[in-house]
Image (cartoon, rainbow, N blue to C red; front, side, top):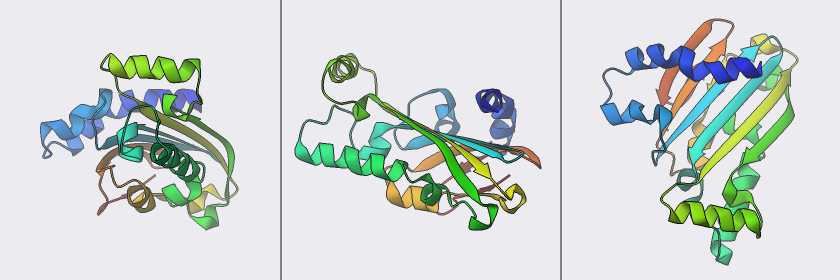
Length: 189
């Protein structure tokens, strides 16, 4: 399954380019770059296993990309992390599918505590790089046929700095890519 998610962005590149031809160039140029307001989501449903990966610039989720120094920034980091640790709400998974979270991994230099990682992130940011958040979720679904797609409205509401999500999915009906926005936040498998 992991190899399926890794190959997904490359397999869907022609589909996405064709599906979004009418969108302005900068809307799909973000596939390989860090663009504020734009996140990427890959999902694969194979048998009973659902894997979802979300990659986003930290500014979309936190409102900033620098190390959290103030109490307010630290609260924002903790709040964002708490929301990302409850993915069932963010992805609108159908209760009928019986999906149970098996694994969740959150990665970002901003989630690290003080010490070497904190200093390393600060050095990177000063050098012109940007902080990203990478979340990976693995579910076991008892009734995968009841899982027809993902609804990301709650994700857009929770993180209003996210304007667009380039979603790519592989499921029982094949593969597709779609540019999602708050007012059009659903994609089917």
